[in-house]
Length: 417
Image (cartoon, rainbow, N blue to C red):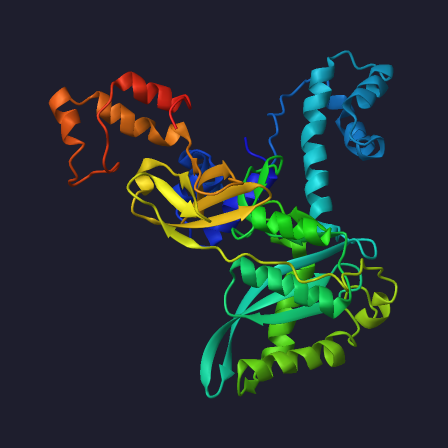
């Protein structure tokens, strides 16, 4: 039996056209589970079959009416019906109350809008749309930030959704609003979230994004996967930009489009009566204290250099060399340095992490990267091992000196430089 949250994720992905196998892989559940709940067509809380003559039956109506008043506390309900003559066990009461609590939580989540205190939170997301620029349709990307309390909105045109564009969008928004909120909410974009679990207990942020957040002093928060309504303020903000600012309009260039959006944010978006708050964002903003970012130099955004992995499994960065796994030899990787560590990525996935060398011409190796190579060497005959000193197809370590295998074991333990 799965919970409502997981079923909602299955339902969302299925509506996007995903296959059952793709959904199972993404959510890390069995494909048969996906098929089962797709066939059902909806989620229902688990309920035990009602058998006639149960000891709890005479108290069912009382429990349903009383459960919410005591916070669905099964122990309290058990004690109350015992005083009325119930002779059954506590487990029956607990099983009876469980679906009542689940249904109450589901309805509450569906109807309660999450509001934040002034200056507490902003929400950020990307939007894409097509506009007419100089007589032709052009696909553009919109960086959008919405302040949670006042609903003031900032929009910036970007060429792409790379991390550099995301960070520059943040800085432009901070300048526009005159400061930043305590926290900013995101929807798990791959540019800033390298890895996370379903519950959000273990989250691995992109190190450069985390360094950016520390530089400006805000705390990043993430939505639960496939819970877009958690950041409904910015979702609605993107729809508002598309449906009000851009619909049916033509522009001569991207520069004139951004200039128009700057005027639109002040003259239209800030002055409208918001449908939820029933106030103008400009007026509510007066009560929204932000942490000032004025006077702080722009964040130094290090470009992510590209490197090709050499035959010796090493990547060169700032005169030093760092190892990667064997299978990435010859491939192009991205190197990112920050906070005392050096991270190496291939196609968006982190493949190696090392402490950053402080000197010059140092070689930083992870012995685990070389184990497959030494394992292959052990399986070779002495004659085959000797051929490794001659370059040829599949050759990985040029000018290899043939040594006793014990030497390589010492290397793996860090005993050989």
